[in-house]
Image (tube, rainbow, N blue to C red; front, top):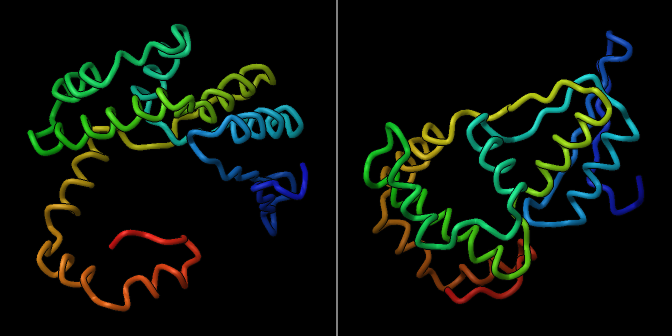
Length: 178
């Protein structure tokens, strides 16, 4: 699978054959999508789990039928306001995520290509494809609770510390304008 592989082969200690192959991906990388497809075809698993809920998988499949037609930024934001059970803050957050995906598409990236590759390869080898994520509206609700539950003044003060850039440098993330 190559030295650049982000594949982890996990073996159950007492159940031979109960192996799990975890494939680390960048959700906008064609190389990740290719690797997912190759791993599933090589391993030929009984099950393929993708980090999507059923609704997001269906949306990706539909988008795959009409490549390059994400609908644009305006449509992404409008779609967010149709999420059942989401409040206005959750809808705004989801609209922002949708707009980000449109920017990534405009830059030539394909968000979700890795997930679709897993689904397509899974079907090709006869695996059961399982959506292993909670519904999107629930995710948005949890993110909203975390973001709006944060002490924003304390966060802003922490980011103004003179040694923040040193902490970022220590993480190896490169320079950030803080």
